[in-house]
Length: 325
Ligand code: UFG
Image (spheres, rainbow, N blue to C red):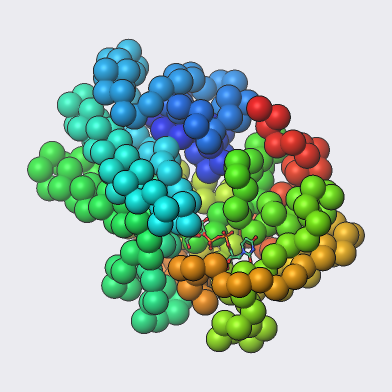
């Protein structure tokens, strides 16, 4: 298949692109390099630097390449930032996604995979969180993904474009030569590894008075390689209909548990201090991913915590300045 990957120079998009190429698909990466890195684009992919707000540039991509499917990663993705700049999320994420959907429809594309989020589930009623959980977005970011999921429903109903909405819990880990490099970095595991590299003095744990066994937040950490396989299985199943999946391991780890594993992997004491809670952080988020297991046979294979942190550490140690751009 010839797949257009928006955000293919970013963390998850680059990993999924590499796996598509490994499986023999053709990849066209469309990325404005706002958060992405040219060095993360697979040498076998065609790279077009462009913005989703630029509808003429987007049309040119579809005009030039005979696209069979779209995978849409390009997005503003920070929960905290979305409270400070809600219009960036509620307007740009949504309008850019709609531009992409409209262009895909215009060029007859019938397959669309959306990168969605566990931030749809603020204060869930059940844990683990499966796809039947009521949607309560936790931030303008989560709402922007909710709106994109809703728009895809209409693309299917009106135009028969089949979609997969994939809601990730905590993506992490690396597959060489690709890594995780955000500026600014806000994610737990890369920050912990920056402490181990001596780039930060300590980790600030955002609150230890949550209703969890050690008081710190619990999350479901899923290796990006497992996310990549889920995307590709979902893509190949689209001809049988649209679908929505929650993607995690079903296991939750606290911040202190992550720290312990990171200390063992790196051999560094990784000092940590306790600070205030970060607004908007739910105490526990664990995915119920039975549906994709049942329907597509997906099972995480690389999400053992030790392996996740080892793979991230191997990359960060070799790339202390990230992609260096
Ligand atoms: N944390 C700290 N200190 C830090 C950074 C993070 O204590 O310096 C804590 C957070 O408070 C949270 C946990 O570590 O409890 C994980 O935080 P991350 O920022 O790594 O990830 P989040 O769970 O907040 O967010 C991730 C994605 C979002 C997505 C969300 C869905 O980054 O894009 O999962 O659950 F929306």
